[in-house]
Length: 217
Length: 200
Image 1 (cartoon, one colour):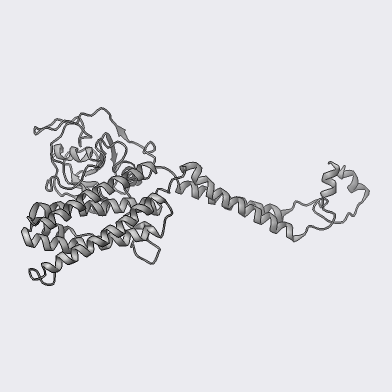
Image 2: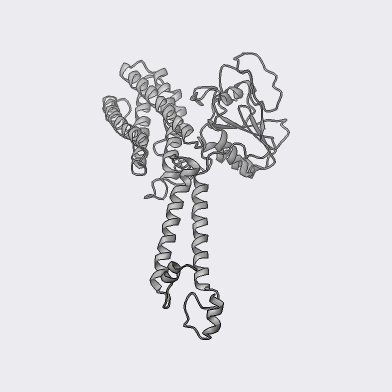
């Protein structure tokens, strides 16, 4: 034993303060490890089951249904305003699906969650029920009805379904805004909130113009 | 040296350096901290694990599948087929449950779009069939249909990937979906699972 070590060795009973310091150090190490290790394994990527990946997966399926409905009404309507709106929704949302797909690829996250949609929103105010469906999605029966309607009837049904669909989309985009700090996710989610909200206003006006045709929606 | 000192002073003042019994308090304390650390770091690493496609036991893979469109019937080497030439129209695969057998040539086109096609041999116990329906209905880019003469109770197929299972409750159903729905094997990423053929 060296003199220096002997000199620093305790001469009296161990002070309880030492344990506290040791415990604090150990906890700091644990916290640092828990923070660092996922990054070593996964780089600077969001977790495969985190809110960003969950949002990208669910919003892709949500968008895919909007694209399907927009195509349906474009095939069934001669109204220029409706056809332009549908064209806008198809191109915008299909391109956003592409962006979110590229995120998932880059994050090495799965494109499917067989445990069901909306788990990333669960446990925060009860928005999402595990295994439940996404907000605003049309049912198979409603899609079937839209795809068998024609002209004015197809237009009003489309507006009703798409207003509900966009409201659900806005709520999902808002939910991820409060759960992530990733700039690319924040940017796209903000653009969805603003873009879909303004389309909701537009569709509400278009719906009002047609109110006489189908009272009560 | 410490031994000598101890002999000279038979009743030393008790402290951390001179006492003979192991410091059990400290040992237990740091063991606990260590276990918590291992658990926390292990959990964090598990959470961050990337999609693992190599770890699926029993996975069959094939490469260099042709991708031509043809209106003709195609003879595929496996049942159900894992890819190859196909019809220009894809089978809708937006989490769709079909109660009748599909035309292979349409289903193969869905695989090209990144879908996973789950097939079962008729006679699968009702509980297992319900389990498959439930999984398919809540997973976009999947479809379910019976294949009358397939050689396993349940088969999962993606483009160039196939897994034969005895039981629908197998954990590998979930593993396969996470790995291959719109997975890296997809020849045509971004292509749709709607707007195709809606009936068997």
